Structure formats: C-alpha cells, structure tokens
Image (cartoon, rainbow, N blue to C red; front, top):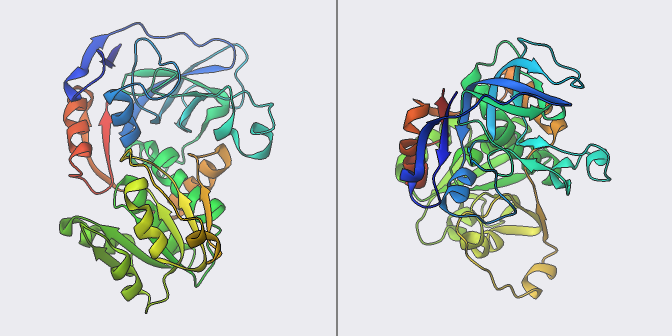
Length: 341
C-alpha cells in the first residue's frame, strides 16, 4: 500500500511516499481502508521531533481517520466488514483501568496514539482497535467524518464536559485553528455568547460564520479587546487552543469565578504565574485531553443533526502531505486540511 512515511525528523520534506506492507489485523484489531485523514498540528509537532514516548517504526502520521472496515481480527466485535467508521485518536486502550472505566480512556497509561506510538492514517490502510472506532452516519461524508474525532470531539470535551458551559455564559475561544473554529460552533450551539480571537484579519469572516458574536484581532495581546466585547466583565469560560504564549492574556480576560480550559500547547512557551492572581478571583484551570469514545459519539450526533459543521478548508491527495503540513504551519487555513489517499 502507499503510505507517507517520515524519514527522520525536521521540515515537511522528511515526509515521503513509500510502498509498505498492508498490515493484518490480530486479536481485536480492525483493518480500515482510509478514505480521509485530517492534518492536525500535533502531526507537525511529532514530525518536527520526538517529544513523547517511543514512536512507531516506520512512523506514519495521522490520527484523524475515516474509512471502511476491510477485515476484522478474530476477536474483534461490534463492527462489520464494509461499515463506514471514524476513529478516536487512539489505536489501543486497555479498557479495564480506572481511567478507561470512567470515560477517561484518553488518560489510559497503556494507550497507543495513532500516528505516534502506532502507524496512522497517512496511508491507504490502517489498523485500529475495535474500541476506538465508531459508526460514521451516512449523512456525514468521509472528509468531514475524519476530523470529528479530534477537531470536533476535543472541542466538545473542552466546551461541554471540561468547561461545563451553560446557556447564557460567555466563552472565549483563543486560537482560530481547526479546533477553535469548531469550539465556536459548539459553544454557540449550547447557548453561550462567543468571543473569538485571531492574529489574522483574513480569518475574521470565517470565525463570524462559525458563530462568534465578536472577534478580537490582535497580534500583541487581546485581553483589552475581550473585556470591551463583554462590557468590561470578562468571560466565564476560556478555551485555550494555543498554550503558554497567550495564558496571561486569557487570565486577564476572565470574569470572577471563571474557568480556563487548556486544550493544547503549540508554542512551547513556559509561564510564570503569581498564584494570588488565580485564587483571589476564584479561577479554575482544567485541561481537556483529546476525545473519549462517548465524546466522539456525542460530537457525531451534533454533526449529523446539522448543529455543527466540520470545517474542511481543503482536501489534498496523499502525495501532497508535505504541502498540507506547510499550510498548517503557516496558519494559512481556517479549519482542517484533509488528505485523501
């Protein structure tokens, strides 16, 4: 099969097309024919250099996958050959630890992340454990379905479960990338007033179309703009998809008793915090770690009903994976780039 393999770590040019063997499913594994695979900023970080535990060899990136079941391992259950499916971001979770049994399998100590510890979806076929695949509704196309497990599901986790957003509250979405643009839609769908931030004036219209009530454009700080957009009060919830580089602006944007939800760290910036600025104002800081199977199913319901529209900026053939990475690195897209094998 054709697959995009990383030859070392570094710039996008380390991504090359190779012919590798089609894997055979064992145990509870499922062989999926990949119809679409999203390109996430996490893919960029893994490509640039190993930053977590052991990587698959050969390393095939991609954890946002949709496709069709081709073959089942002898112990696989709950799926049928030919069924349309999409994945959580994982190839394996144990299913029996305290995390897996309490809807927190994203923290399973034995998990294998697709496109990192296990070969991912930048290929014609991929192996995924049966627990990590869900049925893709017929009215959701493959390109849209591919990005639900990460870009939409993680946004659902951040806004609804971790952020506990209630109707009438105000929500700040910091970062206008693939995750942020879906967090806007979800926050709007649950009845919140949404303020979005971006450094790019070219993205304002896309954020407004996604449902933002106000968009703050700022390259050197956005707290003042957020407070102006909330009549000086600040926001109840902040969804931070950027990381340390914007933490202090987010803190200054919060209303008393506000909840900060950390979703990603793409800048590598460290943060020094005067703890008094947190506890005196009753702020909470929590993190939303990827998407559980239940959260993926809930996100798919929102997509299938039309409440949320997966934003696919463009699709590219597998051979243009390096070009897709450049687009993401340059912040040149609103939404996701999706590879089509």
